[in-house]
Amino acid sequence: MVAMFYKTFCALQVMGEPEGTDWQELRPVEPTPAQCCGSGCSPCVYDIYQADLELWEKAKDRGDPQILRRAKDKENPSVLLSSEAFRDFKILSVEQETEDTNRYRFQLPPGASLGLNLGQHLVVRGRVNGLDIQRAYTPISSIDAKGYFDVLIKIYEHGLMSQYITCWREGDSVSWRGPFGGFPYKPKMFGELLMLCSGTGLAPMIPILTSVTDNEDDETFVTLVVCFRTFKHIYMKNFLQEQARFWNIRLFYVFSQEQSLENLPMSYKNSKIGRINSTFLEMVLGTCRRKPYTLICGSVSFTDDMIHMVNELGHNKDSIFTF
Image 1 (cartoon, helix red, strand yellow):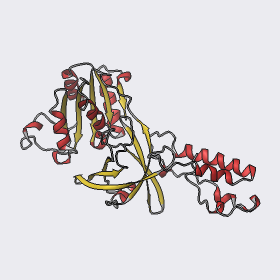
Image 2 (cartoon, helix red, strand yellow; image 1 turned 90 degrees about the vertical axis):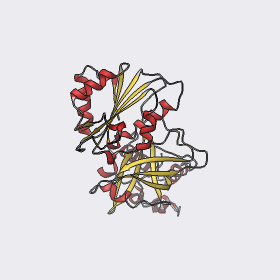
Image 3 (cartoon, rainbow, N blue to C red; image 1 turned 135 degrees about the horizontal axis):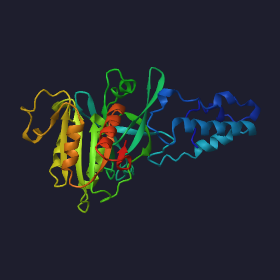
Image 4 (cartoon, rainbow, N blue to C red; image 1 turned 180 degrees about the horizontal axis):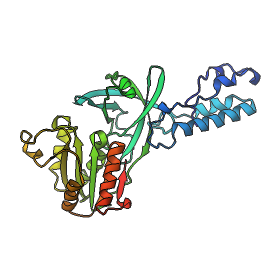
């Protein structure tokens, strides 16, 4: 186990008698609530802390600080990702998607990929005003993308992590660990996928959608219902329009703050103004070509509302997956 939260390993540099070791200086520091991303990662930062603490107690009981050094030396820098230890990745580019959302591309070794499964997320670490914070984000690049991975991130005016992210520039290094979670999808696993998402909840849907359309043998139907404030707040416009051209893909847009659909391009005329309600969702479900399996991603309130509505319309919890 790689100890993430040791205050310092400096005492290990001078290996004198065990009784000279400052054990309190080597004791792992318990994470703060801000260091937990709240996404149910396994191992969580608290799991890692507990394992580090047990290792520290073992070393202390034996009077052998070299146990900590040996654990540290086991870290393999050639491994791109670790669920326990953070790895640094350089920013290749920053592209603005909307007024408050950017797409960040991170560098991988030539020909290398992260080796993620569909829908898996990573955890980023930042430091703001002396406080360590961690948040979870799902890469939107194809799981087979080589040499890079992309992450879509919305910047919140008063967000603690956003204060750190707004400082990112091309060439900077950012610390990530993972992967966690994921949707265990296989081609033709379901007749149809119904994707209900809001804002950056689109992120885990993109690799799944891409995996369907990139595979000529996967005849799964996909119905994507995605919610944005207005037309100008749509992420990945070109990508989504390209996906909509596939015979087995349908897109519905829901705009919570758009005033009218009259001035929108023709391909957006069947959008809905307002929010997803039971009537609209019943219409979508009624036009599905096969019995759908539902994927949901958004805020807690959005997720709860979607689960409630889908259940009310006769779909049980065994046919719903939430990110």
